[in-house]
Length: 187
Image (cartoon, rainbow, N blue to C red):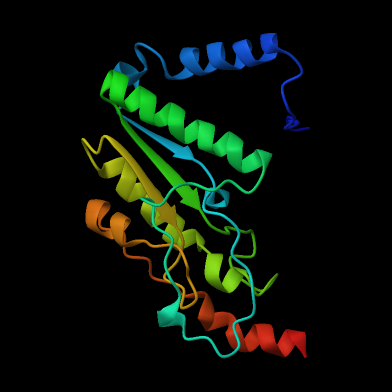
């Protein structure tokens, strides 16, 4: 049987202090000597909420959310992920280590966007996420970076140009290749 975890607010200042101590123990002094590159899976839920209908829209006219834009967590989960990015920035600056935060879109067992129309924008296929992680691990001296992990979807609203420039990310998949199957299932 696997481990079970619960995400909840801190019940006391002592719990908060224990969390900070754990972060220091995890990231702190000596970590950069043991680990050349740290990859932190954060969340796409730092960029705010994006939803709506696609009908009549030009996918090329959709503004892209970049990693340079201010974060806008959409709730407690996103706030926790923002804390993780801030911790990564701190330890990168303090210890000179490479910390790469990946804001990963939808990765699912089925490896397709058929569960929801939103996934036509957010899907990151197994092949594309594997490529991005491999490129991040092979890169050297990146310092602190944030990249969006999403396939090259027609309806993508997260910008991947920064990852293209910094590590050569070239996603191969587009969720649109499943559109006919999705529409057939919708009836």
